Every structure is written in C-alpha cells, then in structure tokens.
Amino acid sequence: MPKRILQGTVTSDANAQTVTVLVERRFTHPVLKKTIRKSKKYRAHDEANSFKVGDTVRIIECAPKSKTKRWEVLTSETTEA
Image (tube, rainbow, N blue to C red; front, top):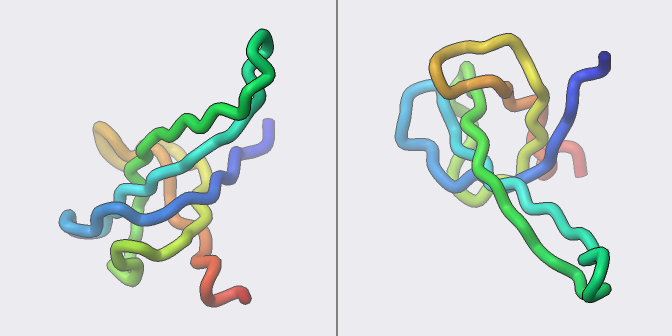
C-alpha cells in the first residue's frame, strides 16, 4: 500500500525535531453542494529543525516515531519552486 503524501503549512516548530503541520482539505457537500473547508493538524518529524512557522511543506506517512508522530517532512515547497 502506498504511503500518503499531504501538503500543509507549518504552524509550530517549538519542539525539538518536530513540526506541527496544518493540512486543509476542500470538498463539496453531498446535499448542499457547497464547498466546505476542513483542516487537521499533524505532528511531523523534522530531523534538522530546518522548517519554520509559515513554511509550506509536504509530509509523508512513516512508522511511528513517538506517541504522536506518524509523519515525516518530505520537502519544502519553497525549495522546489
């Protein structure tokens, strides 16, 4: 089964080797046909502490790193563009 890759914005980098990433998804409501925005925060492993608040990053699923971390930072969107 392939690993999921999500894109989001770093909202916190206060902890060592960890960033909190806010991922927003948009979908159309099945009955109302209105576009709805839902967001969720993921804690991701950042080995080098290289990402700061406001950075747009991609995260990928991984084996559990700690009690709350199940994701690692893959790349930054600003470095690719």
